[in-house]
Length: 198
Ligand code: ITT
Image (tube, rainbow, N blue to C red; front, top):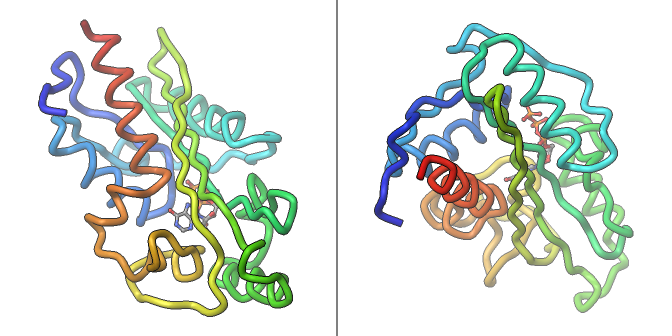
């Protein structure tokens, strides 16, 4: 991926999550896109994410921030979908457990689930809105749920989500960006924007 998006190089990421902002900056700035937070753009929106899937929630956030800032905006909604829990917590991640207690709650629910049934996927949908166009792109990362928290370089469910033998929180940021659901969706976003600019 060597070409650069030239027609627009500043985009607002509609999130309040500092980890997501850092990841997006690391992935998009080498591609020529400067990511600024909604706060830096003068917005402070936190709309009710009451959609029934990731795409609906991502669009709710992107549209709300676009109305405030009137410049290109993207928003993500992401979460963990666990096979043994019928896809939960999924889109309800943020409402599933108190912040910082996600891993403990999930580990407790999974304690009797055998190794071969511990499959899960991180999913991410990014919505892009610029007043003329809106679209969504998505990314997915397949893995499994561990039995304990491992690693310090992560947030949310990273310490219990295992991919290629390590938890996401045991990887360097560069390794996580390569593999992650949000990394995949951000690269997809870049490709869609590049096509749009041709
Ligand atoms: P915004 O809505 O402001 O973007 P949020 O933290 O509420 O921030 P989400 O609703 O998209 O974000 O995600 C809900 C939770 O899902 C999040 O707090 C994490 O616990 C988990 N999650 C999402 N992406 C993750 C990732 O890359 N690594 C670990 N956990 C993640």
